[in-house]
Image (cartoon, rainbow, N blue to C red; front, top):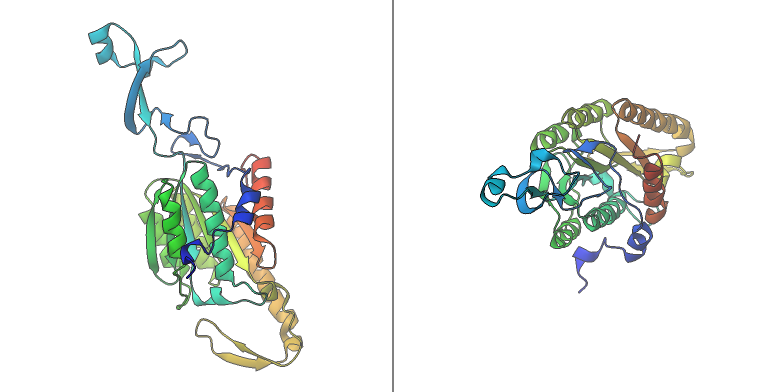
Length: 301
């Protein structure tokens, strides 16, 4: 029987992303994240060791107690567990089950989370994850150990969508729960009231997290290609409706455009990266394009 925990660990995708770093836009906990000039040692957090003073070291880091005993200058070094703490917030609501081209929005989102988790752990950053719909079903604290990848992949393989989306309260709860500033990556179809979504995103920014939103949409949701009389079924207790697609196509596309526009410009107003991705696009191409563009502009929005 295949190991479901490896389901979203796609070697072909990861190999194409391997030479790209995630460069965080903001200074997080005093470090330029993603660049890793000093992956392990910094003048903060837990004491690690002493080393001899060399010209150019800051005097304030001299251990004067050691100097008093040995008459020699030593610098106190500290070990930083990680340069960046990242949390992936993955929408597991029922609407994420939708698919028109062989891969659902949820499966696509899982690949996104798995790929970026791999990259971040390769950079010696730490990664955590929350799975949610209208409540938080799983919260995994951020860690940077290699074994942490298998735990996250295992959880991704166990997801069963079954409830409606409820982002506003979830985002507020998580903004308070994620104590240290870091990178928050939201992966969702954003099937909720945009005003409530943006209010939740503001809470993360108020806590000084950097935020990236991956808006995952099925290609059929973006283009509405239906032609014949069709029965549409709501995936989040929205009932069924039989209609002639041609008669509602323009109105539907206008609604989608208005929804996306509000989210996109609301994110921009609050310095949140908004990235729309269609499930019709290869995952490695979509992520590579975003990360390369982000690196080129120095991490700025």
